Image 1 (cartoon, rainbow, N blue to C red):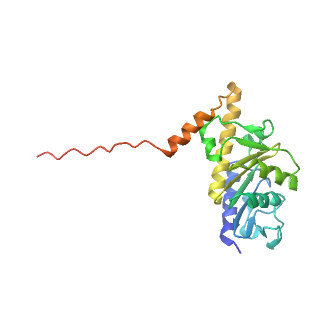
Image 2 (spheres, rainbow, N blue to C red):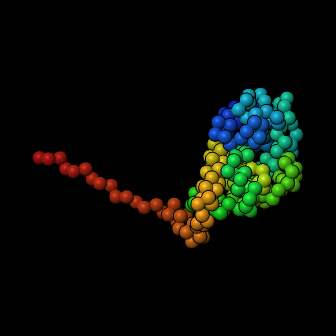
Length: 220
C-alpha cells in the first residue's frame, strides 16, 4: 500500500539528514494520496528508514498499514491536510529556522523570495509537540495561503503539492532564516515594503520580452 510514496519518504528523509535539516530522530515527513497518508515513524532516524518502516494512516488517524507507530506529530500533519490543499508535509528542526522560531513572532520579508512561501512566515504559538493545541496553532499560522510556518521554540513546517515542492520550501525557508540571522549580526535587516513586494509579483507576472537577434545574412 502506497509503496512509491513510502519510498519517496525514505529518499527525502535521507536528504534532510545529509543537509543537516534534521538530527537523529527529530523531524518527520508525510505524503497524502486520497484518504490515506504515509508518514515517517516514531523513533527512527530519517536517514535509516526503509519503506516498510513508514506506516499508513487514514485521515481520522487510524493505522491502516505498518508495524511501527506513526510519528508523534501525525495529528499536526492530519490537521494541515484537513485545512489546506497540501499533498505533502515536511517538518524539521533545522538550525536557523529554529533560531528564528525561538526569537521572533514572524520572519519578515527581508528577501523577495519569501513570496514563494506565501509572504512573511508566521511563528505558531508554542505548544507541546504532538498535541491538538500545536496542530491548531500550526494550522492558524498557515492560514491565508502560506506554504510555511515556524513553530515557536521548536522548528518549521512546509507544505506542497508533492514531496519535492514541500522539501524545496523547507530549503528556502532555512536559507531565508539564515540570511536573517546573519544580517542581524551586521545590523538591522532591511524589510521590503508591501509596494516593493507587489512590484516583484507584477514583474513575475509580466516578464520582459527580449528581442531576438536575427542571424546576419550570408555573404554573397
